[in-house]
Amino acid sequence: MHFTPLPYLDPGSGSFIIQIAIAALLGLGVALRASWSKIKKVFGVKPRSEDEESDSDDARH
Image 1: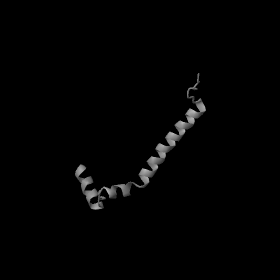
Image 2: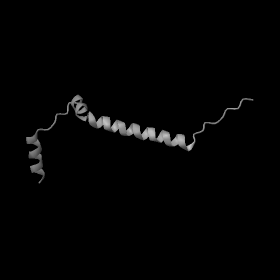
Image 3: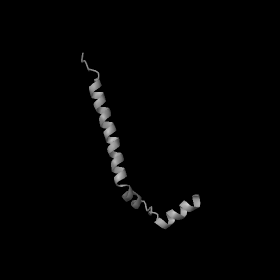
Image 4: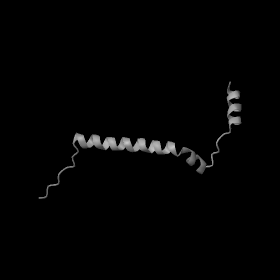
């Protein structure tokens, strides 16, 4: 008869895995924010000019 041990994670391993997951998510967020203008350029979103921004601000108030 073969005995196969059950997988086991101790609390230290579990917290390490959680730290890795959080660090990966935060790193992805930083990378996304750093390259956001390039991403918008790929999808063809043009930045608004200062004149358009001031016109839209006047219309809201």
